[in-house]
Length: 223
Ligand SMILES: [Zn+2]
Image 1 (cartoon, helix red, strand yellow):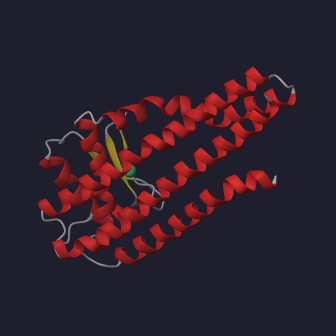
Image 2 (cartoon, helix red, strand yellow; image 1 turned 45 degrees about the vertical axis):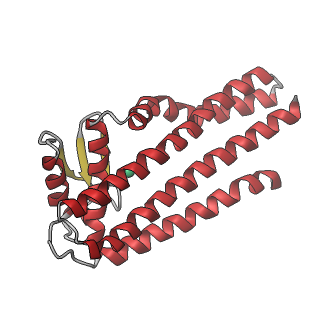
Image 3 (cartoon, helix red, strand yellow; image 1 turned 135 degrees about the vertical axis):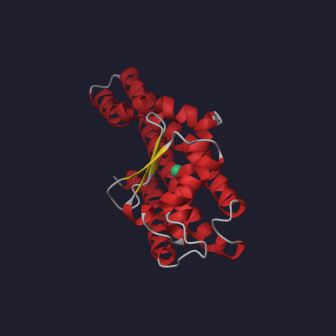
């Protein structure tokens, strides 16, 4: 138990810190209107159209920061706080999600890899640990190893997510200024929101790696 905490707590703390940072940056810059005055939805539309992605729809979705790009249906879904709001935070998030649509259109391979492994990861993230623990309990090491490999896909997913997310934010920052959606002086707020969001993905990757290492250490002690 103490060993588990030793592995799990650092990533968990970083995750909580990053989430608090996202929330505070988003709340702060949600109240700051851009000079241009485009809402998140308008900003996304402008970025998509400027890149010829007229057929990617922009829709409103319920929730707080539930914004995402769905590569399967080619739809960009923005939360109400982003969709309707002409703030620095809103256009930052909208541009980030548009960045994923641009990645998709340009065949950016880390995004393709991530999309491909999603179904397997969804199963492996819960089935892997179960198989692993059963393997340990009945002392069938090969079965535990299969469970570990299944769970390992979660680690691969979390690591592949890093370049995908950082690249989407890089595209967002560039396109917001080049299309005049935010002025160079307004970039600071966009950076604060998007960099905090990037940190949550770093924390998630560290968490996945550390849990994997913990499982691996249990297994190596059995061998
Ligand atoms: Zn993203």
